[in-house]
Length: 150
Image 1: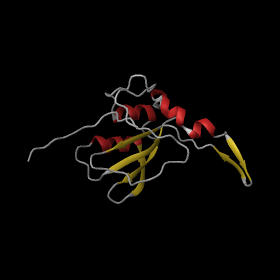
Image 2 (image 1 turned 45 degrees about the vertical axis):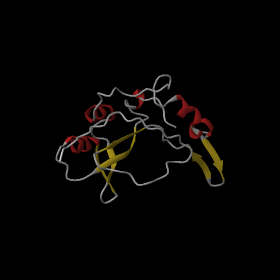
Image 3 (image 1 turned 90 degrees about the horizontal axis):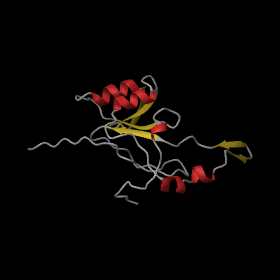
């Protein structure tokens, strides 16, 4: 589904002037985050402040991709509301009971609601399937394009 106009979507996101440093203020600099080393496809952990320093450094030595910053229970989570259609189609939030009984004990509802993804130029994520039952939507806040002639 491609939506060409945002009018009437019931969507709330930060303004396009929002930066990585703004995100840092909302999720806290010392929060540990998992990032992907794109070339090695390995995971490493650092503070969000370290990641923000990496991301704002024009002379990066590695390609890092932050794809698992869950922000639902942060100040940033309060700035984001999924589009109405995503909320209506979301199996996890509409049909999952808070805990479901199984022979070995209850299965808790996964706490996966709002993620912030931050990727540097030339980074990518391997093909994957997100958590079962979640309705995934993306809003690109900003892209910084550099065009070189040559």
